[in-house]
Amino acid sequence: MENEKPETPSQEEKQKIDVSKLIAIIPSASELKGEKKHLGEKRIRIKYDRTLNKPIAKLPSHIASELGIKTGDTVEVVVAGKKKVLFTAEVVESKDNAVVVYPVELEKQGVADNSIATIRKAR
Image (cartoon, rainbow, N blue to C red; front, side, top):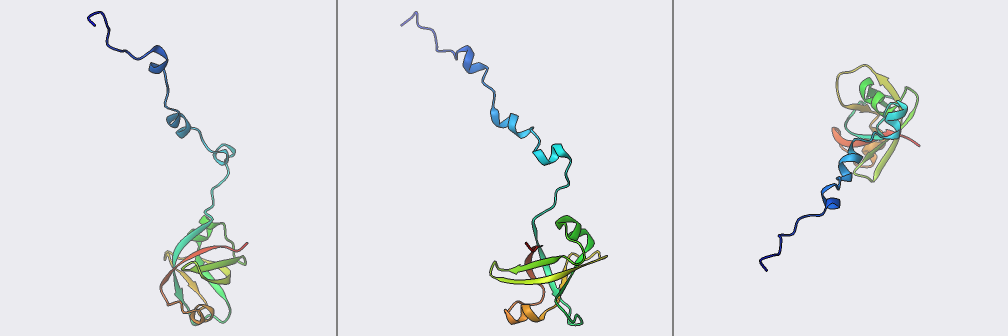
């Protein structure tokens, strides 16, 4: 017992590298190509505008650019994952973070003004 040495880790165990740290520094393929990233969808507050005569959603330009939406595109507004309505997008210059929409279809489904909804480009 006196001649026993305390166990020391072998050379192989000392040289192990944490792979998760290496993976964290590898850029994604889209970053390597230099492509701009667009969000698929965004949760946003919706406000009603009763002066609109047709199903239009007025998106602030900074939100539209994040989502890759242009004037004339079709957007889908989803409330609580169940209530879906399609609108024609109209990009406007605004500092507000709310999307202004035509209220008739949403009111039929029981959605209140100033609700939080998910907005995305329709497929």
